[in-house]
Amino acid sequence: MSYDKCKKCNELYTDIDLNWCKQCQIKDLKKKFTKWTSGNEKIDNFIQERQLEIDSPQSKILEWIPYEQFSDINEVNNDDLSTVYSTLWKNGPLYWDSEDVEYSRRDSLKITLKYLHNLQNIEEFLNEVKVNSINMVVYGISQNSNSEEYIMVLQDYCIKCNKGYTDVWNKWCKQCQTNNLKKNFINWTSGNEKIDNFIQEKQLEIDSPQSTILKWIPYEQFSDINEVNNDDLSTVYSAKWKSGPIYWDKYIKKDINYQNNEITLKYLHNLQNIEEFLNEV
Image 1 (cartoon, rainbow, N blue to C red):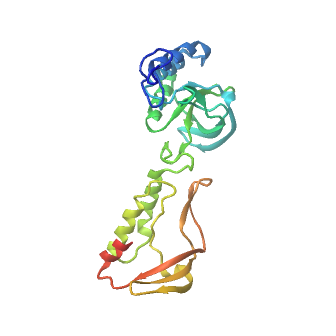
Image 2 (image 1 turned 60 degrees about the horizontal axis):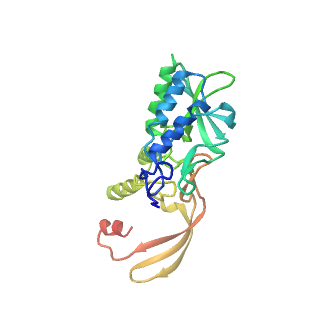
Image 3 (image 1 turned 180 degrees about the horizontal axis):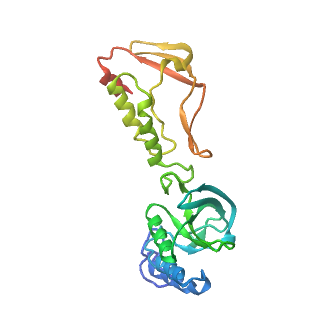
């Protein structure tokens, strides 16, 4: 018996590591076409076409999602183009389980519902689904059972830039955070161009909500300064940093300060120039 072959069709798995067979998964999806409908032929055809385009176990399977699948619906943004809600999807999206060799669901997933305003026809709506699929995960299409409006069902996403979060769990968007840091460059300076450039470059290298944001910190921000070590290379002090370092709060979706944080100040001796100091940093 070959473990590289699909048990259903006896052909090599498309993805051997994850026991996934494209041919068989597409057949299974086709068989289920008769088990669901949006009530709109164009939407059904659109979803079916997208489902048959899957080419890996990581491919998201677009679905028709009944509106009663959503709970805890709360409006988070409203403008001329769209209204956005956060909600829980009871069943959750499909994902490939390589151990059970089948698709399973992640239940009670927090997702986003997006209503689009001023669309002239269903073709415009479906085109918006395509466009949104470029930058974020579109799980499916639904319809409000009261208003009969069609809805895009998306991953939780950044409403500032209209793109998927870099870190969905922490609701953190790299593009927006680096833009915020850039805008703030004019609000501080060390008085030394090389130091300013160094800090700015480091700030723009952040790639996760856990990234430490290097800052220029005015000396008056420190209190309770006490020497703890002194040798030929350096002098070290303990201190409290009044405003404290920045960390990401996913609940309010912004950086906040951890005030009165205990930190260490390190003076370096015998350095010849600012480049040596920055190299030590």
